[in-house]
Length: 388
Image (cartoon, rainbow, N blue to C red):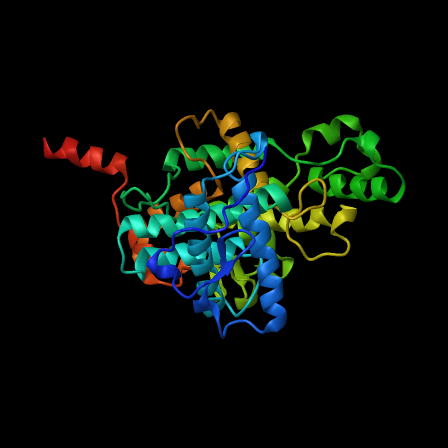
């Protein structure tokens, strides 16, 4: 049985003067939002907010069992998510709904280094953004948002998430070379088959009429090797994998050139260094990419087998698949695409300093890079051995 929201609730000081939905008794649009929205935006925003808050109340705690949050939690979430919305409009280009992963990431970075409040206060505001995302996942099919930081709303601190060790990075690089998506010969016909025969002949240095079914089996595709190798070099965020374009690639100079409008943080153009082997993988992938019909009308650098842009979930599945292939234990670890990014920051800072890590990871705020100013555990262990 669904809850009925109470008509009235005790009001905390932050809510004084806020607009109250008399039918529900929940703050929908705080008074502090006055002046930020025109009449049309106000109607649009109110519709989103009512849907979101009603979802929290009715099913938000456990959608599978249709269990909602308590009135106290919904009331607090209404206030905190409204604060998140106002911050987005101030810092991310004006009114928009619903919020995006990039905006949530920028908000959490702001909490980490510019919001002068307790860890608990930061954690509560992040918790509000996470509830927005939970609603968007359940109702609109969004991916789970990932963050550089996770604040403990009960008073913990913010630390970088887990990262891959040097050995694990090498294992991932090797594992991705064993997977690919060159189609089986029975799945392509006509002009598409002719194109693949030419492509395979080029890869194997064989005449196309000498290629048989066994040759199709030994050739691996270059999409995953290029995607993973670029991410291991550049520390791509999931949003950047999703936006990645063929226009970013500069093979001649071995770099990615990410324009401001495509940058996850939208703060400037970036030139990101790549290893020579990564450049070679991308070159081979760009040649192979032309063989797939799903790339005909898009400049997307990578698409899933179903022709969709990559998201956090599909990238997490790819990483876990690679970890299984490489024999990397994932139990009791938060293994997401950010795990790769954090390894780039950790070791770039160690090898070339924080300035190099800031440039490679495309950080807007130098303070963000400071979290990588730490010595990895294996190096600390070596230091203890040398200390006696």
